Length: 90
View 1 (tube, rainbow, N blue to C red):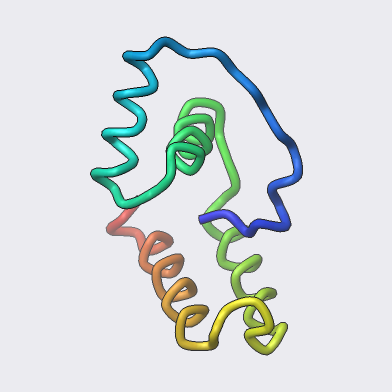
View 2 (view 1 turned 180 degrees about the vertical axis):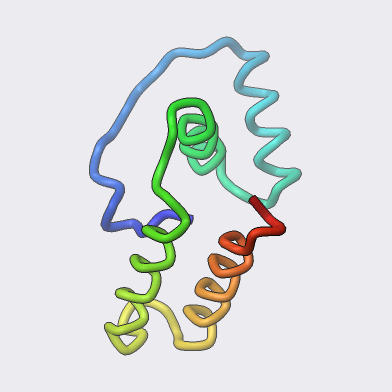
C-alpha cells in the first residue's frame, strides 16, 4: 500500500508485449494496477518501506480526519496494514 503523496517519481521503461501481457494478467488477477504490481516487485527485489513505516504513514493519514478518504475506508486500510504487519503474515 502506497500513500500517493509518497509517489513523486515517474519512470518510463520499455518491455516486451509478452511481459506486458503477464503483468496485466497478474494485476487483473490480484485486483490491482500494473503500476502497483511493478512497485511491489521492486520492493520485493530491492527492499522497500517497512511495515512499521507503512502503518505510521497510514495512521498519519488517519490523523487528517479522513480528508482524503471516508473514515470507514481509511479504517479498512489501517486494518489491512496491521494484518500485513502481523507475525503470521511475514
